[in-house]
Image (cartoon, one colour):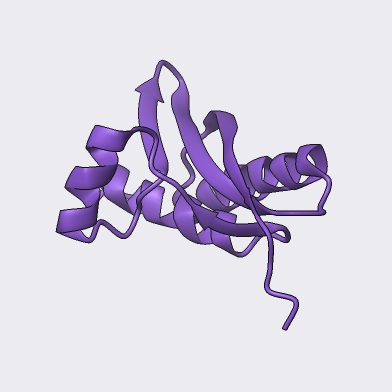
Length: 114
């Protein structure tokens, strides 16, 4: 097959895939900002990938996720599920190998009982 050109996928596109994959995972109620200063800047810019950082490494990418988990769920199981889901979706949608997905639990949220 003849090569017609190149395909470039932005970090923002990869972060969007990771963000959606994390939000669709059982037990995750939201994503948090990794630090206060970045949180303020993203609050005012309405960044849709808040809580996701994508790093390029040799031979692939690494993703850091900052999640808020539903109180009462097993934290280690939710974090592992998020990690696998994000890795699978990024690799299947982009073809880029994911070396690691680091899940940072920033908090727990209790659902309203009403």
